[in-house]
Amino acid sequence: MKKITFIGTGYVGLVGGAGISEFGHQVTCVDIDQEKIERLNAGEIPIYEPGLKTLVKKNVNKGRLHFSANISKIIQKSDIVFITVGTPQGSNGEANLSVVEAVAKTIGENLNGYKIVCTKSTVPIGTGKRIEEIIRSVNSMGDFDYVSNPEFLREGAAVKDFLHPDRVVIGTRTQKAIDLMEEVYRPLYINETPILSTSVETAEMIKYAANAFLSLKISYINEIANLCESVGADVHEVARAMGLDGRISSKFLHPGPGYGGSCFPKDTHALAATGQKYGSPLRTIEAAIKTNESQKVRMVEKLSRLMGDSVNGKTIAVLGLAFKPQTDDVREAASRVIVSKLVELGASVHAYDPIAMDNFKNHFPNIKYFDSWQDAVKSADGCIILTEWNEFRGLDLNELKDLMRFPVILDTKNILSIQGLESCGFTFDNVGRKLHQ
Ligand SMILES: NC(=O)c1ccc[n+]([C@@H]2O[C@H](COP(=O)([O-])OP(=O)(O)OC[C@H]3O[C@@H](n4cnc5c(N)ncnc54)[C@H](O)[C@@H]3O)[C@@H](O)[C@H]2O)c1
Image (tube, rainbow, N blue to C red; front, top):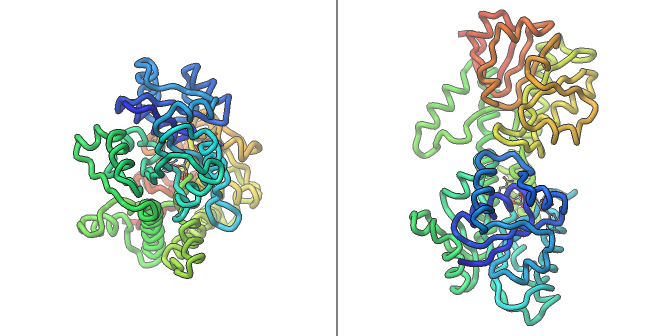
């Protein structure tokens, strides 16, 4: 059993901290946000993530999971310190490492004996070295090993992903650190989860290479979908047939309004920036970024076309704000760009999302929010679906049509039945599917 600290109690830190406590270790999740820590200590979970509440409660009750705002004291008591703070996109596309660097300094100042310092935040190649330098600059005698242990969990399935990962990557320079990390992840070793031991730089690169590839795959299928529209092909049939090829796989071949979330947009920009910095440009990733940006705009153009070439003065119901289902996260969600454009073009937006409305309100306080999809679509001139929540998959199209002023819908997630929409008399569009059988 190891004493472990997670610095930064967000999506990764809270899920990771709870997950590692489930593996049997003593974990304290710390955060600069005192209110968040108070809520956690009061039994509240500040984010929406399926299964997280149960996992946290179980491990708190077993006395293995704790929350604190006293970062220095908790670091001093730890064997292993995980860095799980945010690394948002900076103004030049590069990752903004100011919080990671501040945390590295705090760790250095509290290094009172051998510790592992392990970064789970997604950080550009070379950051490990930088963190080591910062720690040594404030504590030249500090005894520690550095590990890069990138996280691959997906929001919405984070608990499952953390407890049953496809692989664990451990990038470090010493055998002692590898052995200690093996102890941290012992249940996964027993499960025969692939554990890859690499250099720090390779581990840092793996995370970006994986995320950028998935982004590329989404942008690729979105462009194929757009071409399907022009040539009269159905992207779902194309994607299914492509996915049955074992070399391609069916994952991440779902067309839509463009990827969003707290990872793909910033990670593709950061990797592209790294490529430029080292004179080794990643042209495919740069193209994926551009495609993704234009895909969001394309959705607004499609909706405008459906509505007689203008949304000005029209009421548009937006169903789904989260960047994907099963999360309350709206960071870089396609909805942010699309709602902003609709408002700019003079539309009145009526929004509904089962979970993410509170977060969205922080960015768009002036649009109207409703407690059900039925209320959001009431008397709307048009509707756009942006997140494939299950409750939208099962929309009663007759009810929808009766509630709307005009039965006009853009299904950017291709979750509604084309035949159903046709037989109800909707004017509709989707992404890359044949409109008439
Ligand atoms: N969210 C994901 O799905 C995901 C998946 C894999 C990797 N990652 C990476 O993990 C990192 C964290 O992402 P996240 O989504 O959990 O971020 P987040 O914004 O949800 O959480 C970050 C937390 O750090 C806290 N914090 C900020 N400054 C701090 C400081 N100085 N000391 C202590 N705490 C501080 C914040 O209050 C917040 O609670 C990022 O680098 C991200 O790219 C995220």
